[in-house]
Image (cartoon, rainbow, N blue to C red; front, side, top):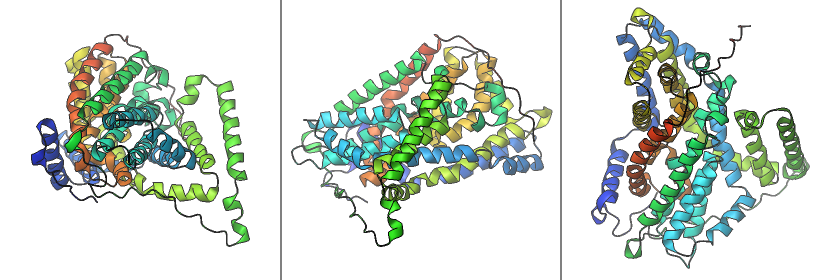
Amino acid sequence: MTTAAPGTSTRSEKGLARVAQVMAGWTEKWFPDAYVFALGGVVLVALAALLNGSSPQAVVDAFGNGFWDLTAFTLQMAMVVLTGYVVATSPPVARLIDRLARVPQQATTAVSFVALLSMSVSFLNWGLSLVFGGLLARAIARRTDLRVDYRALGAAAFMGLGAVWALGLSSSAAQLQATAASLPPDLLQITGVLDFGKTIFTWQSLLTCAILIALTTVVAHLSAPRGAAIRTAFELGVDLDDSPEPASRRERPGEWLEYSRILPVLMGLLTAGWLVSQFLSKPFLTVISSLNGYLLVFLMLGLVLHGTPRNFLQAVTKAVPATAGILVQFPLYAAMAAILTKAEGSGGMTVSAHLAEFFTSIGSGGGFAVVIALYTAILGIFVPSGGGKWLVEAPYVMQSATDVEMNLGWTVQIYNVAEALPNLVNPFFMLPLLAVLKLRARDLVGFTFLQFTIHLPVVLLLVWLLGMTFTFEPPVIPPAVPAP
C-alpha cells in the first residue's frame, strides 16, 4: 500500500488526468471485485433466458451441465499467467531488465521506453508483459541519476495489456479459435477452426498492432509528468528493494537433484527436439497456433532459465496467486455461455439466437464492425476476461458475422482490438502488475484513462476501414465426433 505524497490530490491534477483520478477513486469505492460481476452476469443471463420463455429446469440444467465446459481452457489461461511470471522473474531476464533500465537518458523517454517494451513483450505473452514491465519500471525507478514519475512508469508497464495483448500470440480468442479441442462444440459448428493466418497474422491485424504501439508510445511520452509534477517511488512510499532471497542450504542428500542443473537442461533438450519435430511434420501456422504447444515451450523455458528445479518451483509458488481470478471466474463464463446457447425459449430460440438476429439486422460493412467493437468494449468493463467473455459473445457474434458475410477471422480481431480498451478503465488485469509495483489502481488510472480516450476513436476507425479490405470466406466446419 502506498502513502500519498504531497500535492498528489485530484485538485492538483488538470484536464483528463483529474477526471481519471476522480473516476479511479469512485471505482475503488463503489466497484466490487470482478468475481461479483461474474456472479451477477450469470444471474442476469438466467433471468434473460426465463424472460425469453425458457423453463426454470432448462436454465438450471444449462447452468450445471455447462459449468465445467471450459475446464481445459481455464487451466490453459492460468498457465499463460504462470509461465509469463516464471520467465520474467528468472535470473537471465532479471539481468536483461537491469541492462535495459540503463538505456533511457530522460524522464519522458524512460516512460515511453517502458511502454514500448511492455507492448513488444505482450505480443509474445501478456502474462510475461505484466511482470516484465513492472520489474523494468522498478529498475528504472531505482536509478539515482534519473528522476522519473513512478505512476507514469507503472501505467506504461500496463500498456501491453491496455493496447495490444489480444493482437499477439497469447490472444485468448485467437488461441481458442485455433484449437478445436478447446472450442465448445456449438461454437465449433459455427466458426470452424481459424488458425493464426486468418486472425493475428493478417496484414490488417499486424498494421493495427503497429499503429497502436506507435500511438501509445507517443502518448506515454507526451503525458509523462515533468519537473515539479513528478512523483518518484520514494515520494509515493514504495520500497524498491528487489534483492534476491538468499539461497537455501542443502540439508539432505535427497535434495541434490532439486539443485541439479542437469534435469532442466535435459527437459529443455526434449522440448527443443519436440518443437523441431513439429515444425518438420506440420505447417508453420498450425504449430505456432497450438495453445498447448505454446504453453509447453514457455513452461520449459522458465525451468531452463531458473537453472534448478528448486528455483523454478519457488517462482511457480509466487506466480500461483495471480491465477486465482481466472480459476474461479471462467467456470461462471462457461455457465453463462451454456445458458445463452442451450436454454431454449418460446419458438425454440435461445437468447443467443435473438442476439444474433439483432446484430444481423445492423447489416454488413463498417456499421457492423463498429457496433461489435463498441459492444465488446462496453461488456468488457463488466466482464474483464478476454477468453471467458469471448465464449459468451462468440456464439451470437460469429453467427451474425456469418449471416452478414463479414470475414470471420477479422471479426475475431475486431473483438481482440476492442477487448483491450476496457483494461484501460477496469483495473482487474492490473492486479498482478500492482503487486509488483506496490501501487494502487488509482495511481495508474489517470494515465491509462487518457490512453483510453485516444485509443477508442482510433480503434473504431481502424476496424471500419480495414474491414473493407476483407472478403467473406465460408467457415469450414469439421465433422462432428461421435460420442464414445
